[in-house]
Image 1 (cartoon, one colour):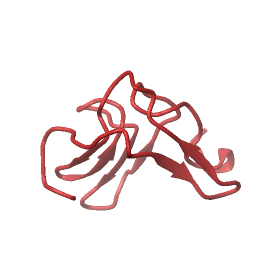
Image 2 (cartoon, helix red, strand yellow; image 1 turned 30 degrees about the horizontal axis):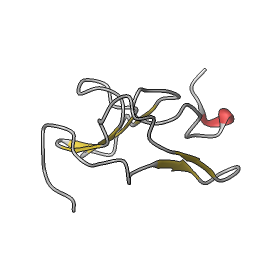
Image 3 (tube, one colour; image 1 turned 90 degrees about the vertical axis):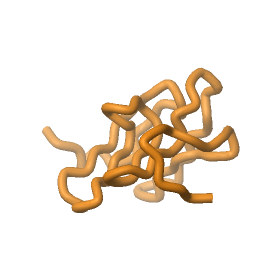
Length: 84
């Protein structure tokens, strides 16, 4: 269930994924439990100050990292989409 929260919530049934250029699923590591946060935007993994994936409510300046302690390591975005 989705809920507004300044804190992370969720459980090990959650995962993040990449669809292009190939399907990749990044399952929970079991180390941290920062699954999802819905406050001033949508965040997954990472930390409270820097989620691994963050889409702000404005839809501007989105972030997608390669690793965190909640989900397995891997690129969410295709390499050619990453900032140089």
